Amino acid sequence: ALYTLYPILRNGEYKGAVLRIEESDPAFGLSLGSIVQDMALYGLGLIAIGSYLGHYMLNRYLQPLDELQEGVGALTKGNFSYRLPQEVRTDFSPLSTSLNILGTRLEEVEKQQREFVASVSHEIKTPIAALKIITESLLDARDTVDRDTIFDFLEDVDTESERLKDIVEDLLYLVKLEQKQMRLEVDMRPISRCLEDSIHLLEPIAAQGQITLHREFSQKIFAEFDYNRFKQVFINLIANAIKYNNPGGNVFVRLFEEKDEVIIEIEDDGWGIPEEDLTYVFQRFYRVDKGRARLTGGTGLGLSIAKEVVGLHFGEINVHSTMGKGTLFRITLPKRMQVAR
Ligand code: ADP
Picture 1 (cartoon, rainbow, N blue to C red):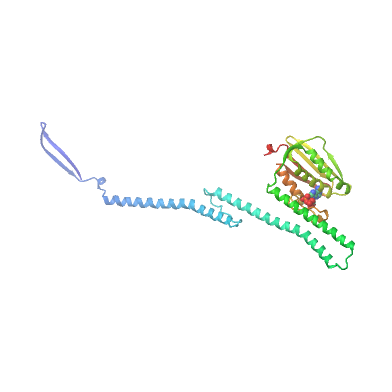
Picture 2: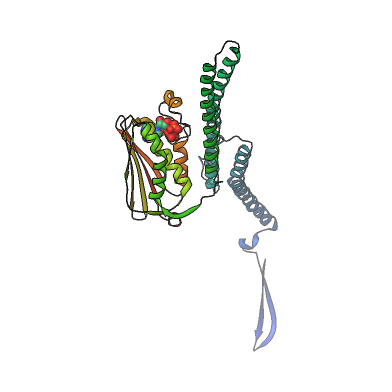
């Protein structure tokens, strides 16, 4: 209710008063009960919205976190093929993408490791099996075998054990290179000197196969490189150019510079490499002619070693070849390793 008091005055003198009592306006008529009722209604609405938002936020953050945890768990258990769902984008999407990439990489490493172990055991098993057959045949025929046959067999034993030694040595060298365990001894030196040393070493073998080695370089070109590791690379490449060649064939060794780089080319006019094999020749134990591999006596690791050494110097090696016409290996090496880094 609304109470109003009017004073009654005459000539300024107070005579009395009128009290007016008015029924209240509907605006004032809200009862406490209805206020509480309304508040409860709004409150419930707010709680509903709040819990929905809470649920949404929890889902948004907790579910991807659970998935991430599951993914990490799978990887630590060695389940590298596990992939996190990528359909819905969340704040954690970049993390789950990285985890999936990690999974793919680990899967690749595991596959490469399996293939490596399989190929190593295959490569090593072959000469060991040959040695076993030779010695067993000799032992079986111990009462009848003559001296000349014994020496023939011994020559085979020598060849096979040499082969085994080469494979193990190359393999250990390659593994050390790949794991970056080998310290490079880098100096600024003339590449031509290193090429000359390698050619000099191989000249007798080339002469045996009636192959001519052509030096197509004259000036001294300097670069920063590890002399002994590069000598091994040049020997591998030139030896291949002699080995996979015909009597009367040629090997051209070139050296020139382009801006900050040194280019070394080793080209032959030998057998060539089929196009479909070209991408694989730098892989460990890859041989174009598997049947002929034992005759040529290589370990199948020469080009992998070359690629690894060139890579450690921030250089590149690539190959061009035409079947029956010849092969060209080209190495591009930065003159200064610091610049390349
Ligand atoms: P290998 O010890 O068998 O020579 P490499 O790794 O040096 O191993 O070479 C891999 C394969 O690439 C060789 O087995 C051969 O088939 C091929 N190859 C390498 N160099 C040449 C070349 N100059 N001409 C033809 N084929 C080559």
